[in-house]
Length: 323
Length: 316
Image (cartoon, rainbow over all chains, first blue to last red; front, side, top):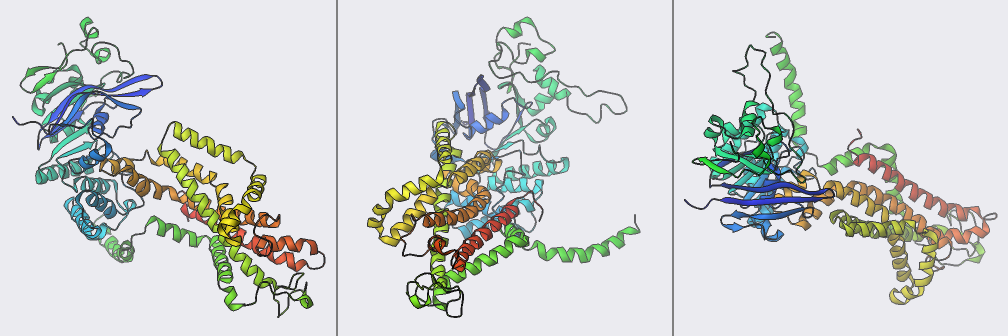
């Protein structure tokens, strides 16, 4: 098999704070193939976002620091690159969209200016050509009246529309990988569906890969091919989407899936939605052993002794649990 | 429900027609601020008065081509008349001509000192705001140090120490102008620096800055293109007030005899010359005082208006 598009190996992104080292990402390995959609799920504070930002090296250093690991982009390690070299990769090869469409656009420029800036920066086009490109991109993300809307300011767009603009900006240089960091969390349900559909459409059009970070299991089930489940800075399970929902092995994954509200199951009964008790442990000097042990319903003495390694239980299905 | 639908449709159509042409014209934040500024009556009126004042000092010599230093002892200490609309001083020199000339200097000093203060303030504030850690701490320490200095004695000392040096380098009038501008501007940048630093500290964490960085914008482009334009509102307000403060500072220096050479009239130096004749020729002091008052108060009112216009929380 050809080498993966992006191959993260044993990445450790730590943050130095006054209280000690916060191990936000602690030995994460994952890979994405060309044209693939990879879902990354987990609760808030699991290190999903830090992993995504590490790929584009958007971590502030200090306090952040790459303690170990490699980020191989088409075989080339990104960690030693400086800002100038990273800026050639950003947008042109890897682009990212964020959770907050309401604040991700600069209020003092028109959306056309902002899309055109990205195009100008990377494609050596004149401002005029870039503005035409910006209108084309708006049209592509299904914004009505694109020729007129390029001259509008962000405050004249709704949240869903702004996320479309963000997607247009991110895709304006046809990146090979789009990292979507909870792109639909801030939007209401119908708009969420539209944005996911749009991303799917763009993916087919440009043949890019998507790394979809979310905590909504429903979104993962619908849009991804493979899923990585993260917990407390570590990968606990990795599986094709069918296997993950059909045969979840890690107690944390099982808990996540059980906590999805099901319209069909609880109908007419006084069923309580299940949740995982407790919260994500502090990543500041975590205890030895499995980090989920304190919340796990199957916990045994061995769980607190050593961190269980990720091992393959079926083709393409890896779990970090001693069960 | 079904019955109300046609009625609401007919009601919607003219409303939509009214809204449509407005939507064609997107308003930039600056256009919006300008619209709000015009609604601020006092500020708008002040703006007109100030523009008139500037027009008078700029075009005055063409309309009133009387030399500023024509001595006429026969007409000394005269009150306003048709020959001398604002009267004359103890040498019989025409006050209108002298105040027009002095106004050019006073307003130019005010604007130039503001530019110096804003440029220094923005540089220091931006540098401090972008570089957390010891650079920030050191720059803010220097800013606090400058804020703690007693302004007037220091101004006088600096003028006294460097006046001759600058005179040799840039000539009599040029040397005085540059020295006054640098000294006044150089002692008034601290407020701007603090404002800019505070703005930068909050703006640099905004998602749109992160988004621009993620899409390959360099650090310079982030600062100049994305952060600075969003931080300019308070800087404009502070800059406006700085113009007024610089005019006062220049007048004070001239009044104390450490500003421009005594044969060059400025509003402050005319006031100084007039102080000994307050009882027999009050008009002599009244007019330059009024000019300073008018310039400073209109600029401050404009600052008020700009602050309200640039404040997104205020409905105007």
